[in-house]
Image 1 (cartoon, rainbow, N blue to C red):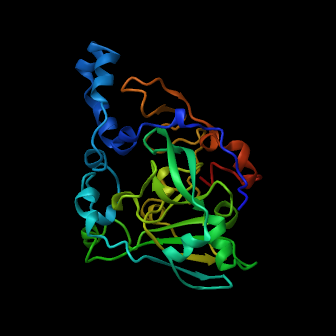
Image 2 (cartoon, rainbow, N blue to C red; image 1 turned 120 degrees about the horizontal axis):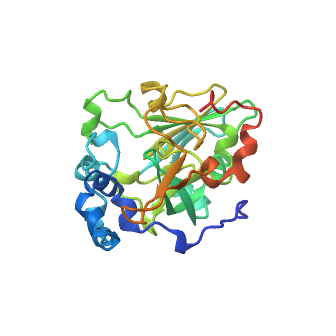
Length: 300
């Protein structure tokens, strides 16, 4: 299979695995750096010693298991991921339930080293394993009338204790415009750091769109629907003022609660130098044409 995108990032650029998995703890440390600031960078580096796999996977968001940062790691082991199937329906030629193993047998899994953007003005470089979403959509046969792709996360209350609380309108939903979904950068991830995705990080299949914010990366996908109408998305439904449908990284549009003009790279210590945020998270050359003629302050 010929891939239509070449990577300019190398393994030397990758955010350390422990820093990526433990990023919430690292960011929380910024609120109490007092003594570390006086002690200098040496102490900051010591505080970032790598953790065990179990420790570093206890800080992430997956509201189906609870809103606390440790809830997903505590409860996500309840989620059954084998067997797994994805229903593909709507405006496709071959609708139906596609078993994950059948999907994977048709795909070539590769490693993609992507810049990845957090909402809280942090960035990282992450090695994902997966395949292009376009290859999966082509497997189902996209019809000419389709304009958008909608995604749904697994909704299984017996295994997901967070769903008993109406913090969001379950099931969790996300969406892309069709040309965004078909772009060769858009990945269906099956692994991270060379390992299968842990349950709390979206096993066994999640979306990665590197020029958009991290909350656009829907986890544990069970349904993909092709449609001619812009689909509802969970965070946009919950707070449209803060979470637009497009969710592109745009340093010229401030989030209502913080500036997006600059960022810190995770892995550089608590005193990492701020640097200007790149338009479309550094993928402007590849994706800017998708938004020609659009007012990106309105369509944020």
